Length: 77
Image 1 (tube, rainbow, N blue to C red):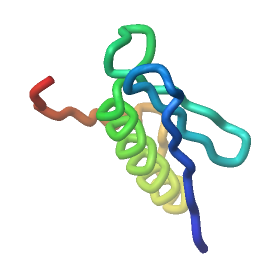
Image 2 (cartoon, rainbow, N blue to C red):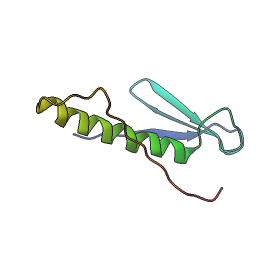
Image 3 (cartoon, helix red, strand yellow):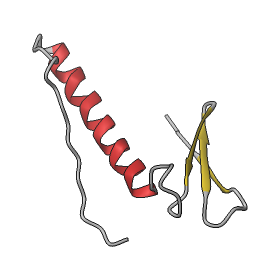
Image 4 (cartoon, rainbow, N blue to C red):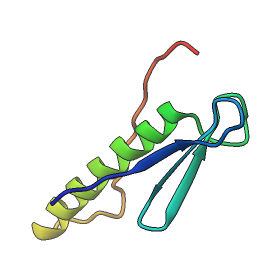
């Protein structure tokens, strides 16, 4: 199965919009009103990990009520 995401500059500074399947996400490192690209990466890693672990737990009859994935990174701005 192939997946792709389109990322385009908005024409306003370094801001970009990513879109796929009707969803659109904006990131602009110059604005505090939107997540930074690295934060979107962390969201993605956490969501994929939680979904995979949650699916495994559900299949084996384990409770998922307290499942939490915390993803962190150190980076220079």
